[in-house]
Length: 280
Image (spheres, rainbow, N blue to C red):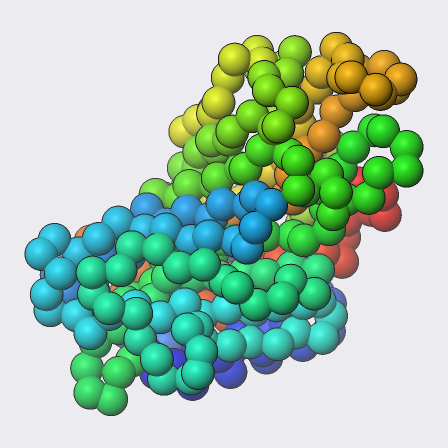
């Protein structure tokens, strides 16, 4: 699939008027079967931390048969902008690359990414991972007067992993305050107003999953809950990193998959942001 087609479809879908999201992401039109050159790019992850969002993926072994990788990205709602990274346009990450940091200023309310496998001359994306997103400004705390930007700088990192299936996993690190009393992990299906799923884990836990998303988009929050913290009078002070989201069902990196547009996946995200109640 040509890069321009991916960018155009991402922008088009995000700019459409709001309508119920679909849970099925069919190809826009039949594409070519993904071959052995697309072995890299699988198992994509996104990590949110005090710094810029980090994407990682499995390498091509050996790293031959492909030109490299590009990262189709969409930022913002409702006025979306799309870009194929790295900048400037046309640049391609080497076939040996297994990670990418988005060092752009995080001024939008959401950033979504897919790992694209590039072949051909001129270069084009022939296969892509599922879509992973970060939502800047969603870090939280129950301590009054503390801005989310400050919480983000002291909270531990959170990594969301995909597997080209409906399966997802989370891992995280402790905040600068060390291990909490427990962690509360919430998964919100933002395409409806259903109550979020929630699980409480021991403070020694540093991950959970894999779990079956059943093909639904979920946004995840990992909250560290402490019994107390020095200098803070709030009972059971808590803090969480920015939310991370997975839009499954779009990867074309599994055997037999065909190339498809990334645009339809962003429809789910668009509905997600529109539906999320204020203050959630």
